[in-house]
Amino acid sequence: MRIGYVLVGWSVLAGVARARRDRKRQRSLGELRYRAVGGQDPAAALAALRQHDLPSRISFDHGFEDVVIVCHPEEDRERVRSVLRTAPVDMGGHAAEGPPILFTDELPESGSL
Image: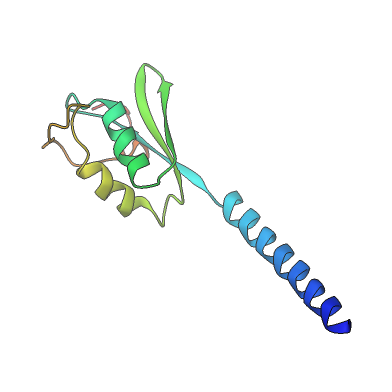
């Protein structure tokens, strides 16, 4: 019977530790904002990101449609850039060959392209 108590206690402690670790990871999440350029449909970029399990949404900000990606901005920046680089230009799947992928924090001061 004592072994049962030990096992239950251990599993409770493991569950608490995992919950704390997950909560800490969620708090450290931030976001990257991508402004679709060159006629790219933001919905196509959004679909490509979601296909790679990157939570994202479209946000209207100061007259621009930004794709907001929830991730670790420093750790996931190049991964997100790679996904966006291969995203189609429209929902029809046409490939895009445009300017380099820049996030809004990398844009010149004016914030527009």
